[in-house]
Length: 387
Ligand code: SF4
Ligand code: SF4
Image: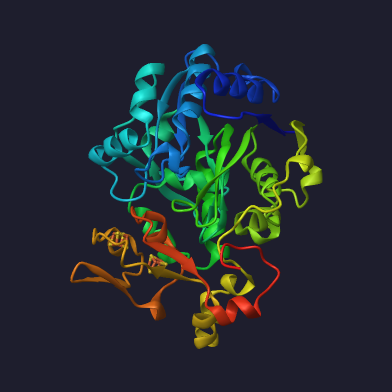
């Protein structure tokens, strides 16, 4: 039976993080249970986009440093492998590594940074939708993968953690294809599960020292939780993390679909938690993006409901006063419903699939997620940033 360890870590002081990460791994059997001498180990951090560590949008570099050091202690060769949003190129990787503080710690810890942008087609026998897919070759070439998510809210999927972080195994802009093909939340959740199963990370270490609440995954608010979580089962870890931030796991499409497919337990009481007492650490006022039942209706139903869908579902709201006209939202919109006119974005909400890629990748935080006032009044019972 796998277990989830929860360990206190009050800040990102290097020695403190190293000690806490070591303890988190020790509580589930120790890193040497997983990493054998000579293994090539891919570290897959959440480096969604070029953001300073203080923004809490990406895994803190000190967490990556600590995991790299422990992998080396166990005799492994760590290499950081990630495909952030946007084009998958060596230049983009260089900019993101540097902007997220990863270049510096990689040098200090002697961790290799991946610049090999080759991709490979793989079979995925456990996949429900994706029996074959194209992923980053350096991940497939590794002997072992350590998944390094950040605990954050997510505009489209409500929460992002261990399972969602492996979406970064899909090269660059190909991710938009998945949003387009799988725009129902249930289908997209199953796609994320398929991707996770295809690359099979053997260990997960989650950075919840400073989490992100509100308009995650990139423009939310940092929230200190002072915790690290570890497990060799990403579903168990995500279930524990969702409980920690007081989100009903049934509302999180990845966990709800994971239960149906037999990968995820349907109650946190069924997982073994070691270290800190999970229930006494629950953060009852953790803020989520606007989210409700109507947010989850599928596209066929959306056409039937027509206007009702447009009125009741949260939508991307553009704050043009903050916009610098970079056009990233337009380039990253899967159905191409954002046009740049006079260097300002204009969105056709009637054709918007509510994937919130634009909100996720806007470098200026100029897009948030808004529910119309009428809907906000009518729908109650959810704690969100706008009610
Ligand atoms: S990504 Fe943000 S800053 Fe860039 S054009 Fe779109 S709204 Fe403006
Ligand atoms: S406008 Fe934003 S939320 Fe709508 S489809 Fe485009 S990227 Fe997705």
